[in-house]
Image (cartoon, rainbow, N blue to C red; front, side):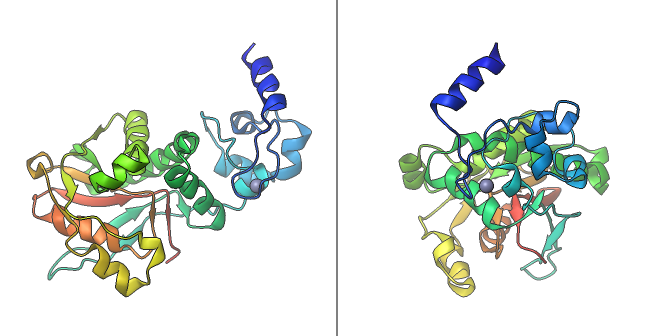
Length: 262
Ligand SMILES: [Zn+2]
């Protein structure tokens, strides 16, 4: 019945790819994952390597990009590092399922600027898979006391947007891995310009000191996972880490949907 309803909806409101605008049609990555119910149309787009790697085990709808654009997303191997800024500071692991690309940017822009919550389940699914891999091999796995901390928006921006996209992603990831989210630990102490409009130096100045601790005691002794949508130059994450370090967490790592290639 559900299949028939979605077929009817497809006819009434054709879904189009957020990156290229092409019709998505009946693309169903869950079917791709199981590989047994694939239609010739899916075969047309996906080579076997992509089927097993990108969509293996997926359990959510991903009909926000067409198969061709999903195939352009580049899976990130292992984790990157954000260099420590303060004297004696350790590098911070940077975990993400993807490297940034035009297709990933289209998803994040849709989420941030067009109320596009439909990208949260698929992005959250891949982010949870990446974080699960990282936690499985991290040294602190024996004390699995993690808290996800979304990069906060200034209250004015959150009010106009209606939500914090990092918090939406954090809740999706937390629900999949059975972790806690705490949006009280960090706060944005002043409003800033959109980082995407600035060069690296200006980005650093823009966010320097823009974050402070809210209820820092909830991070003390915990493995803190700072969450953002994308990490490009890392200036926002570094400014958050500088604030988080004063809460004496056990460790800090960063989780984002995408990161720039090293
Ligand atoms: Zn497309």
